[in-house]
Length: 218
Image 1 (cartoon, rainbow, N blue to C red):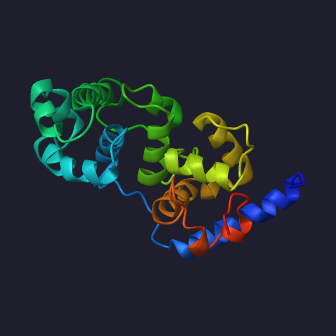
Image 2: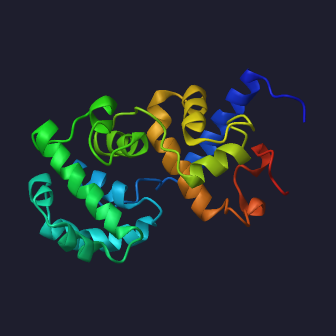
């Protein structure tokens, strides 16, 4: 294929956006939460674990530890017992307790609303901070790049072929799409990845953006 111009890529990205919005009007964060604190904890727990499994685990966790103060004072073995059904439960118990302690020590129990302040908290990296800012505070600070987002960004060639790391993929997606779309963009790509563009067997024959995808099999 001839090299795509910057203008042509932007036009294709715009059409992909419009079609995905139409195909997945229900795209949203699938981690159950009632407030920013719960979302941050659930996001920490979601590493290498499905959202479904996290959502099965967090009700009992949040019933016992509803805020940063109660979780910060928790015994690790008690938290581990509540997290036993998810992967890496011991390290995750330590991480969320440390996070809660950091919220109390540095933010007086309230989650900060800036990327710089959030990533200074224990257990919070840029990805988790982007999830919290975008979904709890409606602040588009970046694009959340999980395995689905990375796979679709590469298959659709929204990023350069040599772009493979999450930070690099995020930078290119941020440059391609307007800031106000960054949070929803992640949800759209995740929903499309789960429902249509499977890692092993993408359903190209029923993909709404197949005609815009260089990796399409049809």
